[in-house]
Length: 145
Ligand code: DHK
Image (cartoon, rainbow, N blue to C red; front, side):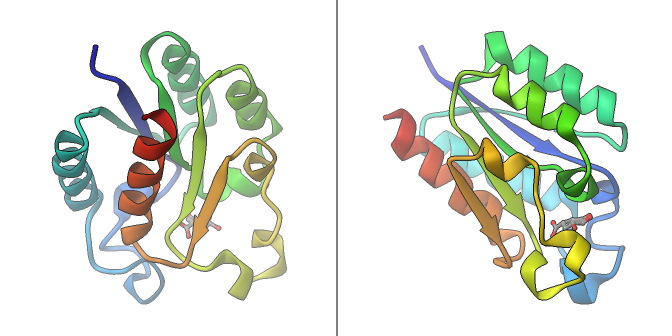
């Protein structure tokens, strides 16, 4: 049976391409999701995409992933730095998790240097722009092979 990856994006990423393009680039979230869907097809993986500005909605989606997904790619955006609840939800998920940040958070304000989610992630990608999502998908494909 085809394995499915959940691609999850947190708050404000619905504004990708419009919000601070000097930091987050010009690609929209729809562009990213379309490119990842094409890559997932090449990798023979299913892909479910989800974005929310609400912490609880992201947690509910991670709970859903427990039964439906083999792995998770997540950009928790600002919740990266604040959310023990998202970490706990990911700890209740059995498969591999890759954390993605579009910007290099370590080059930015000190409050972006700490991630709760990194305690759970197999790998963390930061600063590759939206290419980070495809790198994460490729790596998950190898881990799940
Ligand atoms: C996106 C955000 O919205 C910020 O809150 C994070 C992350 C960084 C990113 O680089 O994708 O600090």
